[in-house]
Image 1 (cartoon, rainbow, N blue to C red):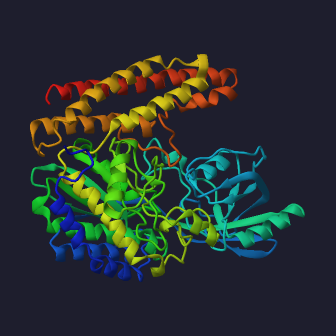
Image 2 (image 1 turned 90 degrees about the vertical axis):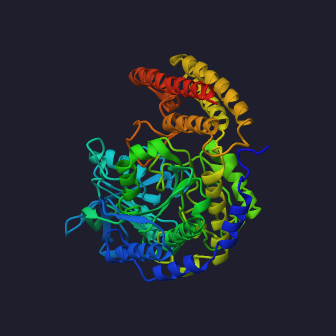
Length: 590
């Protein structure tokens, strides 16, 4: 009997893997070495036109959208201390300073490092330094949470000291995609610059010897810009309305080969091989290339989620983000982004296609994961990575792409960061995963893994809340959902040898998509369906996460938190109840 993860079309899968070739993707990567693909720029338009021309030559149907995106593009920056000017970069969405700059006394924030790690989008202040009217000096990267925090603490500006000799570009707004009436007021209002570690050490040495005044200069190009958004569609033959969305960003910092020319080339090769085998596809494949990733906080992917939200909600089976595959020395699949219900499927796809091991982790509020607010099961973002031993041997620090190469978001992200053999290996993973999602009769999601995670999350929050919150309704509803899921997966045994389009198979798959629409939503959003979360860490079951803050809450905030948790328990319990009802309704059709 087939399992949820086995291939049901071995001949097609073998043919797809055998047809993979470096010719098309490597030609594209080499072309992109001469294109600085800044969003809204001529080079970016040239890159999109190149992809569209190759799709046309390959016969792949595609559409070039031209949405208006809200961008903030860094132009130049500097830091002046004691008459000496230091090289600096300003992140996207820092403010532009007046010509004379913005000056103030520097204050060191001890005990905190804004690392580019799994918690980059989280922030726990570890210092009570008064930064009102001062320029804070912080170790690490200038991401959204620390800039938001220091701005709200009254800081006049921020200086981030990057870990190495290079300075990394970045983005510091918490607004995801284009601002709306609920989010526009969160745009940063202070200047932010980053400097390298040697210059940072010099600045810190001066601060140890007395008060230091600094002047920040930054200039950015900000506003609404028309940008390309390219989407190819390869129609399936049995359920053409149902589709998998595979996607990645074209825009880059400098030529950005490891982030993300390699991903763009991967998408083109996937489009080629699946189009060539389109007569054997049961469901449809959409392949999308985005603009505004780096200077629009995932602008085009968010626009697509908005403009095609109802279609995505009705018909998207999965979204697969492709960012920084096939990079130099990236030989392991560890800490790969994947939602719990898709974990076993992702691990099996990696092992079957490469023979490698696999470890995954909860998706972060990062990348082009702009579809959580629709409730879509998701897998992958960054894929292969350099072994930890090699990272330590090279003295590298943690970065957010390029297979762990520290050329990420710097001028050094050039052709040598790409690795042809690693790219071809990663392409096998993507092709295998997509073939099974498109052709296997049953969608490969085990929501029992997610409900087990929910049980552990509820236990953690309930223990923290104690008598301040009653989690019983959520526990009871979760138990009902678990019972319904047991019946659903028992029924799957009788469907595994069926065919795409069979009534029972369709009812089963509809139930899984309905589960995702409810359970992904409550696990990754506070704002609700079709509303964007801030670019900050979203904890599991975020409506209930404030239970962890009760121990340190004063009289007033304890009661505020109790009210919040009561509403949160209602939301979570209702999602569990709704999911159980959907499963039971599906069982009547199987």
